[in-house]
Length: 501
Image (cartoon, rainbow, N blue to C red; front, side, top):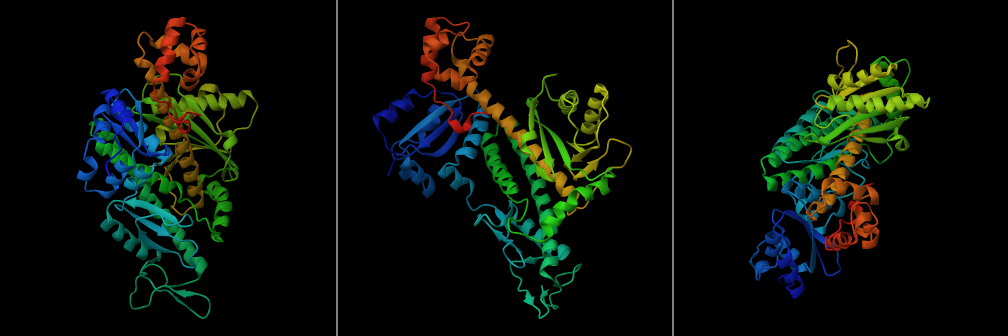
């Protein structure tokens, strides 16, 4: 059946502006079922309510979506790139039914490893079936993925889906029969514990492959957005979201593994030996810089204690000393701010500082200590490209094996710093997009706009204020306050889950 065409909806569509924005389609219960972006809200949203549109569409999912639309809301923004960013944030947090269906359609392969199996195998799948398993991907190139798995079978001695391992009387397992000779570099008879160590090494390798592809996708997404190929950029963005979600859930087996706790306990000692530290590092702090083409430049600091996140000591920073794109200056600023304060408060420095970046970022961090006349604790950088450890002295860069427990600890720390920085960056972008609605209120310049937001503590509190409360703020009389109150009442607010912390 076609989408409902009530006079109210028709009137809403007629009033829509010919401007960029995001639209939220809702069912009769008011649930958001689809989020989309538009270069022109008026043209895009009206297309959903054209007579006979649902019957003319051959794709069942889209036809079903249109039949369920009972109402909609819109959020205006200043540009199509802002619409792209806001659409992605709303989809990521609301997870509307039909956006999820489209994004998770059976296009890309995942690799699934179930730790509940006695001998976990590497299987291909297109959907996430359970939360116990460990997933890698999605991978766009199925042929290349299958070749990679075949190489991993020979390199690490793991089992794929077609294997039929045989139990032996002494409690060991024969992974493959001698005729196939699949295992070139590893024995075919193993204990379950030894096999799990192989699986963990292979998972670390596959995790690295996923992260390489994620970096490539981000570059392609940025290039598509720069070329104003926004539909392509949106598709790449959805794939980045899916891959980020998968990577966030594949750090460790959720089922107990006798080899894992020992590896975690051994990580500080392994780092001490690899980095030539005076003692195993108990506390580690990591810094990361995040920005979008030099805008919304922020930094994060995360702290691990005894190998685990210590969130009470997480910090986030906005760059104060300059405007623009300079990761080195940004790193010098935030490192200086952090340890100037610790020194002033008489608090101890961490046992190890980790910088997300290479020699340039490490040098900038060291410069901050010299400028403050402070002795730095042990400090290294972790360069993403080859997971190379960079020292601030004359030592050559160090590459540890991907299965090295010390490197795995540094990776977890770095990844958490990256996640925390990106979350703050996204919050600031979302806040800026929301506040941009004030640009459309005539006669409200940047100085007065900033004063209003500072007075009320943000757009949402300003939106909730009465005309009398707005009039009491500096710079607006009763008449203009009433007009602003009416203007804000006509705007569609961003849902509570989208508001910045």
